Structures are given as structure tokens and as C-alpha cells.
Length: 396
Ligand SMILES: *Cc1c(COP(=O)(O)O)cnc(C)c1O
Image (cartoon, rainbow, N blue to C red):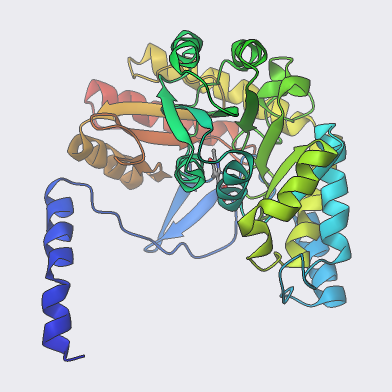
């Protein structure tokens, strides 16, 4: 194809990018050199990393590295095929067993990512003639899974069981109903009211699916997530999680009944049309689950430090909404103002990412502080002081 013709056909992209730039919404990627740690190198500057989902500081843990190296030596790196063909290796199966034991469910299934777990599972559960009830702030992978399913999607107001119930009552007759929600919401840092949702699911004979991506390993007495914290773990039919956040590895999973897992093995397209993850990633995740079990102080310390930081920010007058865990949003609203705040923090040695639409609704641009067990108490105090100074306008 002549290049000028192609350039003409794609001219709309340049215009759209310019539009994003004008609105302060254009995204850029940065390469961060160095090791997985609470410290980042960016353009020669050292920054404390408040932007990672490595909540338990396991991504760089020597024990995970060693497990991955040993598995690579034994099984090679790539797995070569889908798990339904020849891609499944002993560490994958062992990890599925470790996940079901950790979750206290009969079975679990490993996916290439948490994103794939959602886009594969939802269309396996519902189809045309069925209805989904989905929280307004659910993760993009849940939204995409809903779209792929071709079921009718009823979006209920964020974390609002009364609105959910109203919509269920008004929804008429469907073959099957599915209620789906994040456990801990990744942008607002608040919990879904799972106890209320479980009651409503019983009343309306709906399946309940909870994505614990940000909570797995951190929230709940044993780290199962928000459902455990709210005492309703055994009332959640479909539990989704990721190995890529607090567990410091890569991959996603679904846990639940043996029938559910058998069904997903047969029907979840990203499970069998995608190559199995490297066995080494599973070996590292097995090690991470051991550590979550044997070192509960990681999640206890993290939870306590997050509570202190939320209180300090609230007393400085920042809006942190209903944040209740280790993800703490500082809601600014205007993207341009939020960007200058993020840059001011960077100058002071802190990386705190800017979260703009479409990741959050228009007008809700925020700085998202992800706390990790790897942050020192001193670093958190320095961040608190910097935000306090920026709030009151004095140079910090
Ligand atoms: C991050 C995230 C995912 C995707 O998990 P990956 O393993 O990173 O693909 C899914 N759901 C929620 C709620 C998430 O926050």
C-alpha cells in the first residue's frame, strides 16, 4: 500500500491523539530500570514507588526468584501449548491445588492472567437470554467479559445493594442471573458490600461472582479477600483472583466447585485458546502462597500502615472517599491539576500515579497511592509530610 494513502486513512488517529493531549488525557509509558523494589529509577532519579500492586513485596523476593529459576531449569521457559493440548506441567497442577487449598474451595483453574479469567469465565456462565448485574465501577476485564457474553447487562450504582435489588426486582424473567463485582475496588479503594450482595443473590436465585484481584493475599484473616473479611466466603459461587498483584507472580485464577471448574475447563475460551503460562511463574506463585500463609505479619503491618495514612490524609483535608484498605485514592478531580500534583510529588522523590478517565469517571481524576509491605515507615511519613505541604501550599 502506498504510504501516503495509509497515512491519509490513519489521519484520524493523529487528530484523536491531539485531542487527548489537549484534554490532558494522553498516556505515556515509562521504562523503570532496576529491580522490583519499593524504590524506582526514572530518568536518573530515585523514587519511592507508590504505584505498584506488589502489595506484599513478594515480586522481588529471593524465594520466588529461586523457585522460578529451579522450575525453569527443570521444565524450560515457555510451555509451548494450551493447557488442553500439551502445555500443562506439574507446577501448574500443583498451583491449582495450592490455590484451592488457600481459598478453601474444592477446585481451582489457572488462567494466563486475571483479565483472561474474567473475559473467559463470564461468557461461560451466561449468554443471550440471561442477565448480568454489574457494579458501575467494576474492572475493565469484567466489563469486557459481560460484553462478550451477549447477556443483558444491568449496571447498578457502585456498592449499592438497594439499587441492585431494585434492578433485580424490575428485571423480568431470564434463564439465569449473575451478580458480579470487584471485592476491593482498584480505583476507589473501597470494599463491595458482599454480605448484602450474598443475601440478595439468595433471594433472587442469582449466581454471585467476586473478583478479589486487589485483595487476594492481603485482606481477610488468612488473606483470601473481602469475602473472607465479611464472613461470606462460602456464599460466593465464583471467586476470581490474580497471582500478579500481592502474590508477586503472573497469571489469574478462578476457584469454586469441581463442577464449575470442569465447566470452565470446557468452555472458557482464554483458558484453552491461549498458551499455558510458563511453569516458572506457577512455581513462584506456589512459593508466594506459602509466604502468605507463614508470614501473616506482612498483611497485618500493611493494613495498619494504610489505616494510619488514610487518617493522616483525611486530617490534612484530602478527599480519600470510602477507601478502606491499602489502596488510597487522593481525589483531585481536574486532570491538569492532578498532573501537576503528581509531578510535584515526583520532584520530591515519590512516584504516585495519576489515574484519569476512562479508568475513573469524568471529573474524578485521582492520585492513587498503593501501599506495600516494602515501604518503610519513614518513607510513608515523608510522603504524608509532602502531601501535607502541597495541600497547604507551602513548599515541602
Ligand atoms: C488487575 C485486575 C485484573 C487483571 O489481573 P491481571 O492478572 O493483571 O491480568 C482483573 N480484575 C481486577 C479487579 C483487577 O484489578
